[in-house]
Amino acid sequence: MKRLSIFFILLSLAVLLTSPHFGIAAEGTCHVPGSVSQGHAFPVIVTGSKPFEARFTWREEELFVSSVPNPFASNPEEAHKAEVLLAVPLDAKGSLPLTIRANGKSHRFAVKALSVAWPQSILKVLPRYVQPPLEVQEKIARDREHSRQALALRTEKQWQLPLARPVPGGITSPFGGRRVFNGQPRAPHKGTDLRSPEGAPVRAAADGIAVLAEEQYYGGNTIYVDHGQGIFSVYCHLLEADVSVGDKVRRGQVIARSGATGRVTGAHLHFGFIVQGVSVDAMPLLDFPPKVTGGPSHSIFEKKASPKKARSKK
Ligand SMILES: [Zn+2]
Image 1 (cartoon, helix red, strand yellow):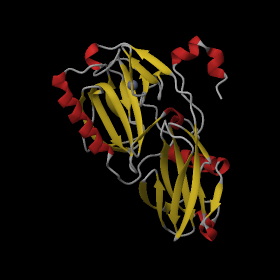
Image 2 (cartoon, helix red, strand yellow):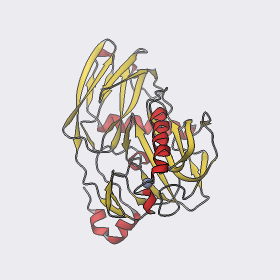
Image 3 (cartoon, protein in one colour):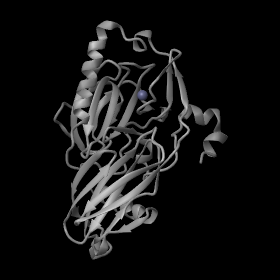
Image 4 (cartoon, helix red, strand yellow):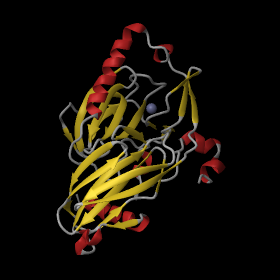
């Protein structure tokens, strides 16, 4: 718990130092970054002198957040805070409007989406995972419906930053890469593949509730953890799950063993992070403070192959 408190102090400081501040009259401030790269999540904090309700309108979704006491307030106007994590989709362009309503006032911001040069990966998998046979298409539709229902949940905030790294292994396939399976282009990679041998423990990225734990066609044995505010972590290709739907999990708790189930080329962990329906790169959220610009993340192979390029990334 002590460690988490320190993280929070650092987070508050980092946001204060790096974000533009916008006044809510004498009632406190909104901390909103001016630019965010595609495929990145970013925290937004509103503070006030008294308890308040804040409404965040972002990408056609409204999030209602009740303030909580702010133990690290540097002045009485920041005694209470409401915090959300929002996301810029990997194909977003231009300026995205954010409206924050708090203390009876509306504040409008524009968050500029910065382009990212997503890499391309060429992969070979069993043919049945590129052209699923007719008999499994019903199963795939069922999997999608289960995922959709889980991701539609909107619960109270439980997430905290930075995220815990679910496995210690390096990135074998980064988030956002355009993927070609057996010569056929498919959707961009919606998570990060981390090296992890079969049977290795997989840890929860943050506090939350397991809201999906089942075998899916592409993801194999899959777990979704709900962290509140429409924020979910996703763990795929597991050998087995150690938690069931409805279980409360803590940040860093072992929730599964990694494996090679579903559409895979070998044992690894596919780690996804979804913010109000938008998949983002979880890797910047493991760092402190979270980087809201930059990317893409680099794989361990890429660094070996072209160390110069990896180092000189902007
Ligand atoms: Zn993956």
